[in-house]
Length: 364
Image (cartoon, rainbow, N blue to C red; front, side):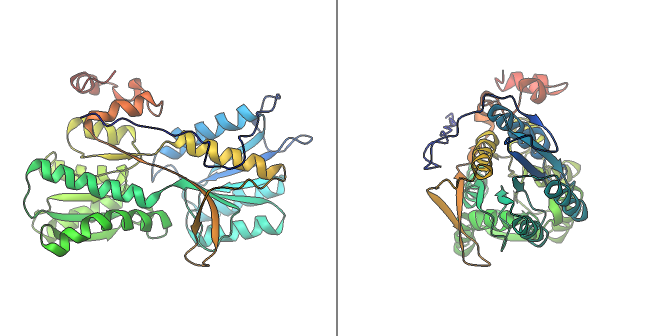
């Protein structure tokens, strides 16, 4: 049965109405002109997930240009010193709003505090900075992301008829608050099955910095630890999932051990079409970017739109106004929905050797 993607509009997330686009055409720049807002964005890296450059940058640029504002989007490439340097430059260049995807809460908090001291409004984008006191947090319901992963793995193991399966965890980076939320979600599905004896809890490890190479080494060690008896892998994103699949391929077990993922990357979707990955979680980054851009522009104009959602900062106990979007589970039978939504193209997904695989799965 086809699982359709129902993408809700941003209306309802922000109680304040959508901001009207400026007549002036916007573009990337280092300084704001006249009263034109200047928005700074710091992305975290290109390695943990390709989404930051292929999706978030693209959709943020489109949103800022449609609104006619100046923007400066830079990527710290996983370097904490570079993250701080970029922030210093942006604040010196007079950004009105600074939007960050932190590398860790400590680094992120220092940058947010520095911005606040200079009168610069801040937004946590995708990852909450613990203790950071950003004006807004824009992300997905990350517990729901994990819940979809847990439910997806159960579905795939059930379809394969595996009894008392041993499930291994490849969790995300321990410095990323989202990784803890994902785990909360999939634990809510799998822990009762472990407790009842229906499933067996296998090895569990965090993967520093969401690094794929480290994930492959860790998973190889997990397999050795239990004599290759792992029946399912809860991998927290597509990068970690692909790392596990690489090891499974070497062992001739790919396609027989369900593996989860997240981010609906081209690689993840290709692995799903090949039958090597059970599922991924699609997050409509375009809507996330549009919501964040709308808030950034409002802040730059001295406005504070109300939101109908909030999250609790577990470090301070403070409520942070939030926009949280709903994720969608993607299996082989609804990969086309990710294409139809404009997140990936047929040309990207079906290039070279994957043309036949796409044809076999009705991808067009």
